[in-house]
Length: 79
Image (tube, rainbow, N blue to C red; front, side, top):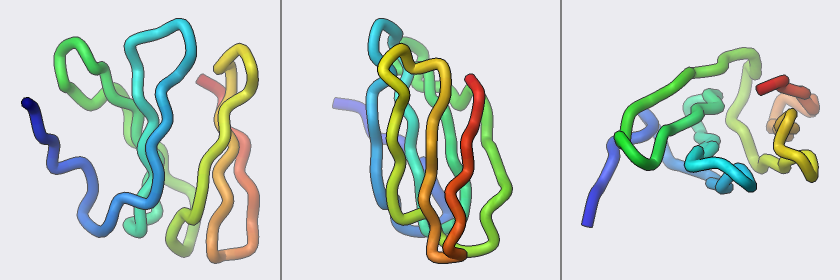
């Protein structure tokens, strides 16, 4: 069993990226993070929202991620 302190505030959603060993997490801290599930290390921390992220979705091929935030914006992130 492994545990990560992934975000400074509540984690709102997580999704595995299909065909990879990566995990995306979104939090109330306004950050979208990509994790390597083999090494349990942070790959990247993406910032841009001015309010907490409510949800995230992945394109079918996992080439981009969409986040929805309480700032009323959708953001499209390329992997």
